[in-house]
Image (tube, rainbow, N blue to C red; front, side):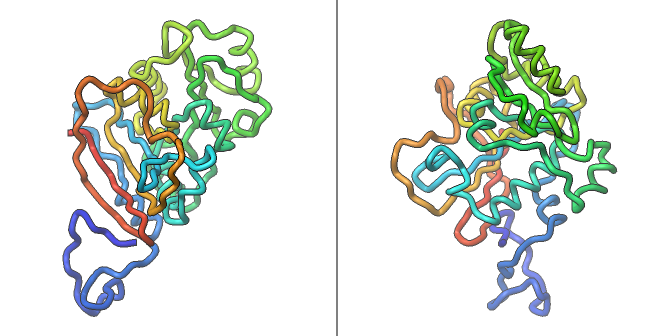
Length: 267
């Protein structure tokens, strides 16, 4: 992996990380290096939480192929994916994404265990599933055997029998809306009330679009996959358009095997 932005300083020619001609060598970064590159910003008093999104897109804008993101991903993308999870308090995903991608509980990573302890975090991030209907398979490992209880974000009008089924399975139901759906801003606030301030959403496109429209997304980590798929796959964000396009600033750019790993923050 190579850092393209911020432009790295020129290291000594004797440095083993330097490639031919004095350029930074393309090598696999350690977990600690990736963690430093994607560290959450320190609290500055202005924001109680930090909501980061992680998505992948092909060159022609597809967020999936055959309904899943894996075919357009790579080994490096999965390392970044694992690092972002390891840094987060909670991973937020839409119910459809949980079903399509076969979500399982987050697993403990020895490489990040001490850092999570030092930061006062649980051994793994909680998974928070956004679902209006709660039509989920509560017999799956995501609900029956996580290291920390899975959260379900839903609205106040959710069916009581489905709430009961979720709680019986061991999930924690969090009300974050007055009707059947979830209000994105309330979801962020509800997670903060539970002590989750470093938030990561992995989509899908509909959920990310809701966060964008609500104006609560602070950062987008976008992997640009060097692939073309055509077809009618979704973009990384869907739903109603915002009235005025939101401007984000590019803060870092990494590259490996043609995949670009960009990081944008809200201005």
